[in-house]
Image (tube, rainbow, N blue to C red; front, side, top):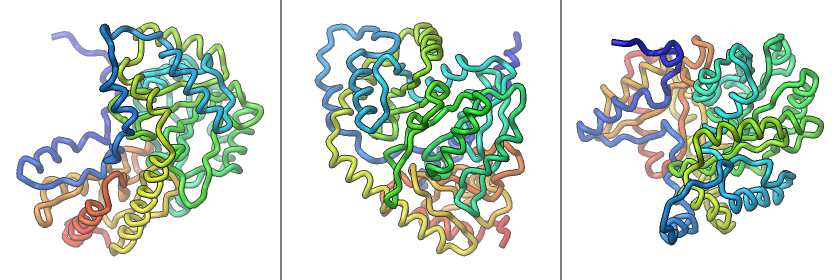
Length: 399
């Protein structure tokens, strides 16, 4: 039998989905599983998007332009300009989700063996995108004690070497929910300018900012316009994870020209996904107002509930719909598997994502979990009760 490639063996599996078999087995036993492990909102997709798909009067489902529908790119550019990001449609490549945008960008900007710096914990799939491009990841750790604020810029600078080519920032952050301040972003800008690095800015959660805080796009940072590559997606903004439409946005024409070559090799982004995404730009403001109020209420309810459980600590996230909580457990991987396979309370259990999957450093996140507050408050209340009861009897409890 032929052997698979070294590249295939080195490709990391998703730590977020590793526990799926245990959740499926629990369901087969008749146990209700509350999915707090993944960013799949229960918020309804905008009606304008669903209607556009229903009303699509296509005789043939054709390829689109490899860069995406011209009409969509023009409307998307206009939506960016409306929030102060000065781009036109020629500076946008529509992709099959934000994941493809990252993959194309890494392949365009780096050679195998180059290095990128990412503060940890970070979105686990960055590891996969880096592996596909043959990159080496360098990390520095944010701290739960200060809400996972940006590590000191001096620590970033210590990691910069001759092979360092870029920095990746997710703002607001997945998995921590941290929202980076203007001061933090300006310090990053100065560092990027000093070493002429690429600045990859994952901004798919920019609408989800709380307590009067405002999102600042990396596209607005002066002096590094050609360094910034913004990755965007409709998945979270419109609760459209399955349409698989993202965008690579940059004023660096050389990056775009090369990214389009990759776009041509996969022919085009999904037609029906683009139909839904373009229609979603017409979503009324009251949709976002309701979503904002709902997520704010869920966040407050969840974080307050977590901090009432003995031994649990959870900082208040300022953005996205995730938080990282510290639990009184010996090993979050073992605990998250145990609660699915060996525990139930009132015929219910909870699925969470061990935070170890979001750290590059193997020793980190051993007593932390990422929780997505994408369920309604009744479900969150039940999940919190299950978690509290589980921690009372977990054999590996530490305090």
